[in-house]
Image 1 (cartoon, rainbow, N blue to C red):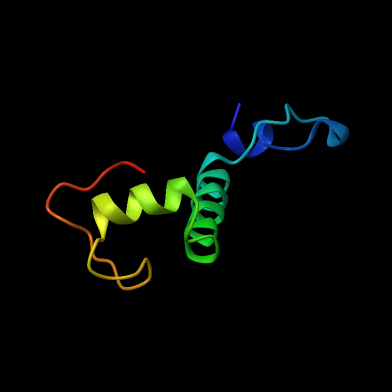
Image 2 (spheres, rainbow, N blue to C red):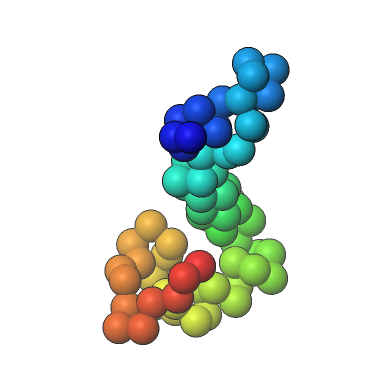
Length: 69
């Protein structure tokens, strides 16, 4: 069975699996938005201190040892 058929919603006789690539992009976008808008949150401060201490989230480059987050 193809992934296209598996990812159709259950209402439409599919299995209801999520498209993982789209879901991952949505979750990463949500976290990026949270880091940009709530700069005083613990998550934003920790990620900034570790991965881009001298710039902001938008101006950050991929470092030499990037994380999966």
